[in-house]
Image (cartoon, rainbow, N blue to C red):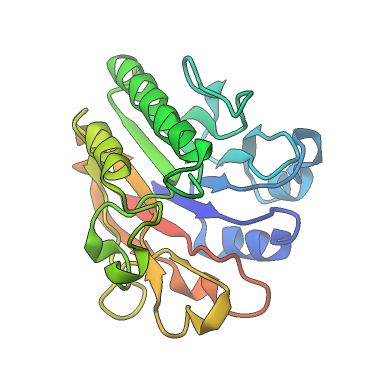
Length: 257
């Protein structure tokens, strides 16, 4: 089974690239984030033409997540247990069972700045993700949580730690929240880099950041032990960040035995 995650940064703007990527990379399951469309505007028909069912949770604003599957789509749930809002719950999580594996696509709040109310919301949301995941692991021992977490787990996951002092994505409470998620028995499936020494998954559009590899690893896959034991390869699809009109994120692709 091939499972992937990709923050597409607008499924409408990136649709031709998404369809080409689905055809060439052939994931069995693809988690998408930052759809930026209403649920009824999601491109179901072109995705179905490639053999994929889609579980979508989207409200037409700046969020939106989906799980695409060509190996079955069951037990779909949208949102998290006791999910916090800002002020209302947002479309940031959707889960489905695909060929026996529980797959959750997540788009963690950005946090903006450490003194912004959005930062406190981010931490509450990560707490809800941990609680929901803990509950589901009892029913679905084969589980994997993928998506844009908007957190770099260590200083090695950013191109220059000194550039991020006082910023979100690297603070101790955010990193502690990811550590608490891993403490459920989940493995951080670190992908091999597409090029160079760093498995970065995000590069700002500005200042030639991509070409200089000024990036961050903020797109993650956290797998339960039975899934992690089946991983035979994981890699950053850096080629999909190139060309005209890319997302600012690259997909992460995981191959399971």
